[in-house]
Length: 495
Image 1 (cartoon, rainbow, N blue to C red):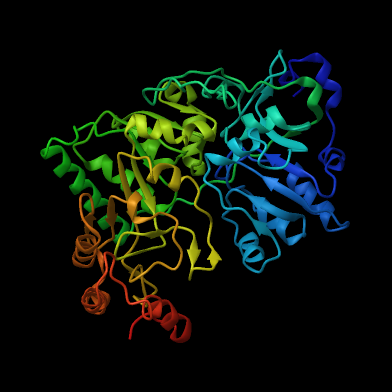
Image 2: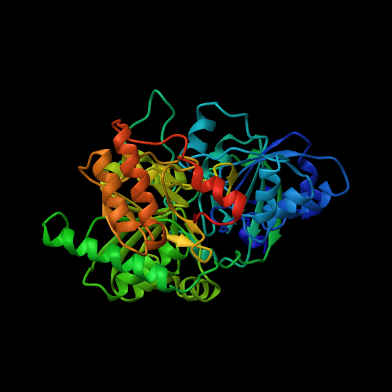
């Protein structure tokens, strides 16, 4: 194991997780590696949760995105979290946030590093970073994600390194580590295609910052990959049919443009749908690579993918990392303030496909809150992509819970993406292309194409009566949230 520390003077920093975690003090700001359960802290943060059960210690925790192995839940249950940012998916932590016990900052994933570099957030006291090994120059080689680790390594006062021996050292070379200059001296980020590599293969780190090194041998939490069901299959079919029509119109070619797809079963189903399509030589410029991305590579459909993490099932993990030589020229992992930077998204002409909790008749999208008040996961990178994409697509099922909930409403209970940032809306019922439409046209298109039959008549009535009252964006304010209120009172949005 000591061979993974190639800078001799750091070998005396090796210790146990129980000793290393003593470096974390009450009130500290901690930055940890980890992006969608990949490349996260496997021992230090869990050890902190155990410590918090015995003593009063609360930290502000920043990561790239969500953590695996239930770590967020363990920290929340132990009372170790004062504040959390920028994203989470853990049900225990979610409840603590919604109960007001943990403060949560829901950020665009491109922004956390920027805010730290601009000194708009408190300094990072200590960083906890998972690595494959430490190179001779003191730089560190990440594992299955990059996330915000570059920024944490640069700005943290102290660093604890977790060397994960379950990840082979041959991961060296799959990362493209680039840090943009601070303002006002920032230069152009010279990426003009997803496969462009512009940085180094390891993260620079001042060895004097390294306060402790611990060894681990634990894989990432496997992704929960649900097979496509009837609804997600229909959504995928609508999207693929739309793309085919765009090709027929001459707007796109059979290679499309670089694709971004959010995480989850809908995104996975859409990408899986490309396996049986006429599209080929596809590329991705996204945040996370799921099983479907590697399935497309194996099928010869996907030529190259850029992201910030690999979050896959155990079967796919073994397939990729046991045969990394086969895949290493087909994907790259970058810092999230590069993978999600708005300028690159606009320059590359990304087709962005993300999931909505609900949307309204004018195309405003709620991605984060149930009933307008309770956080689900967070906005993630959907906002980075939606506003800047060549095509901004949002998908959701038309109705759920035995059709007691309509996901298309008179007005969304919380707005993450305004109508100005949404081009295409898709449900299992159909697709609405909103480009070039005024608000009244958008509303009718959405009602005609996307709404579940159980709710179409009532939604049409709402819109007709609102139009009689007038306005550029007609609404009946006294009824706008009546569907949400009805659900809270009766358990169903139906009259």
